[in-house]
Length: 199
Image 1: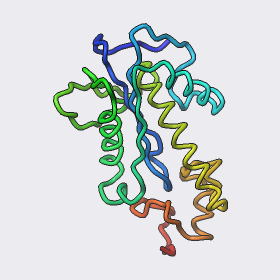
Image 2 (image 1 turned 90 degrees about the horizontal axis):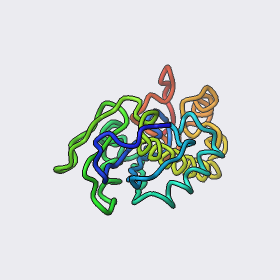
Image 3 (image 1 turned 120 degrees about the horizontal axis):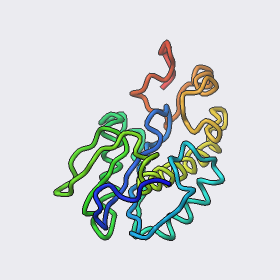
């Protein structure tokens, strides 16, 4: 089972994002404070779970968490401030919405910007080590997947319900054939050879 806490403080928040490497759609972050006695053997890094498990666990996390928040940062802002800044901004916006305010923040990965006076720790592969980060990864992934499935209806030729905007061969072939949409990140290398694409 994953570790409960890094700081041993009661109001420790875990935060993570999903969709950083995608060519289309938002980057989505979540932040979660779990209660001190919370235990769940099934919660893990969202990438280690199938979609059925993720969605079941999402319901448990939302019900049991002291508080949680999920935020999207959309394509235009990603293009404007870059994906790293957009990921951190999404996490900060999540923390803005937590009540109570966390006493400590643990972050998946190795990059973060200080959030006010709240101390933080970056933990590489933290979503496979700490319950609150894993819970945040599950919320971020499931909410982002929902968004991509919804916009798939608008542009089914890119098969976003399957690839979720990631740079699969199929997704790149569709970009080559149909050009790009309002949901694509124009600052990203959308095609390996970056052919001229219709904006």
